[in-house]
Image (tube, rainbow, N blue to C red; front, side):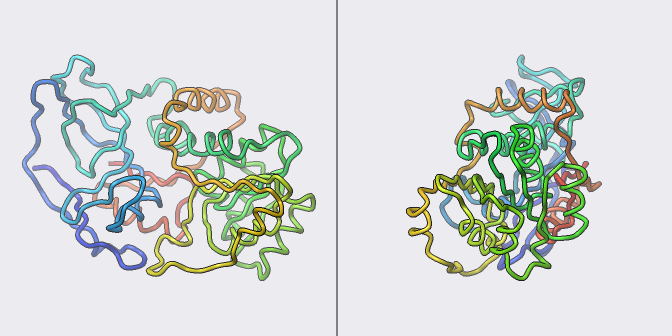
Length: 331
């Protein structure tokens, strides 16, 4: 039998274990042109919360009663497709199943000799590519500018900050504990850091940490921190809207300051994106990230959780900040 995780309910507020259901199905068998995949590593990411809502977005919502899906590294255990061989490993958007079949479309082979397999879900996968392309295509930081990053201890934010340092920026990070503050300064090389949980006035704290103002803001959280960052943007500043984790579990749309006059007054560019906007650039982005890793210019952290049955718990833990860097489930 084959274990599967279904979406049982659409969450109200923060997801809980009761929103997921474990079930068993017959073990799949590949047909001609298909491969049989065994799940090895599962990526859980905050954006999956948006897909639990029944609303139109850049990607179809999960359906109640059907399996969830995310980025997965899987092993080819049987192949009836001439493009794949038994023993190879692939990366793709796959369902939360221990075993599944695929015709190979949308799958990319990964080479465990070049990097650990888990890295292809993190720094060499969509996580690293998101940080790189968000900065390159929208933020466009330049040597000597100030880069501000929220969610700076997270998987995407920590990479974005390090890329800023490689370019020659002064990099300031925002995170939610003293442990995370120490980590982004000591491990990731940020120049300064702000603990938003112990800060009474974020606008003032950003001004003090960024005495020359903010040229590029890489935003992973949205909400009041975004408001404070906008108040400190320089003329022709760029805001990269990558994520808004502070809003994902809200049942109502919160209101905040109007941004129109701020954007106009300082000629600020503010652009949201999903990494799939830049699919044609994935190859060069991954190569650049791999080169920087080989040159020891980039480092990363992972939080690994053991067991297929713990995928939902690992996902929920993201919203409590229990991950250090990329959260990955080892099956």
